[in-house]
Amino acid sequence: MNIVQYIDEVWPHNSLLPTDPHERSVARFWVTFVEDKAVSVFWKTIRTSGEEQEKAFEESLEMLRIVEEQCLGEKKFLGGDNINIVDIALGSLAYWLGIIAEISEFNLFEKFPLLNTWIKNFEEVPVIKENLAERDEIIAFIKGRKALRSS
Picture 1 (cartoon, rainbow, N blue to C red):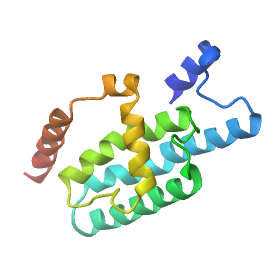
Picture 2 (spheres, rainbow, N blue to C red):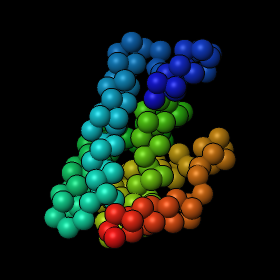
Picture 3 (tube, one colour):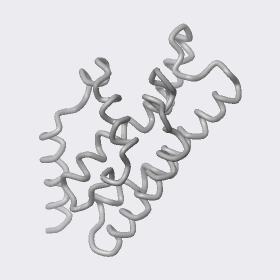
Picture 4 (cartoon, helix red, strand yellow):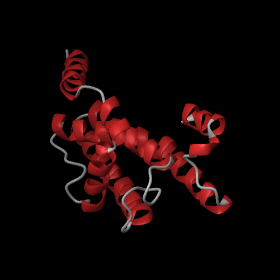
């Protein structure tokens, strides 16, 4: 996110942060929430197994519930009608979360219709769609890493 903030400062004419100081502060709060809380919990769902993985899954569901309830509502993106820095922060995880659901027995999104819609909207933005990593390659990589840890 440091790079995203740098880009935002260098090219302010197309800012990813809201212009209103309060809204900027709220956006920064959610970026920190994603970086500090969500990332570690989500990754535990693929790095662990058994009870530890189930606990991580439950924590992940709580994180997603908070984001859906507090950030989305009727908006197309977390930033409203346009992508903002919070979309970028969570969007970097969203693609991986779909892969986590595919690899593990845990579907993190089935209970969150607003997040499902948001992910579809986000992944259809041309610049996002053009730059997503190849899903099959990521799945093969993660399965390979998991197999190495198991042996």
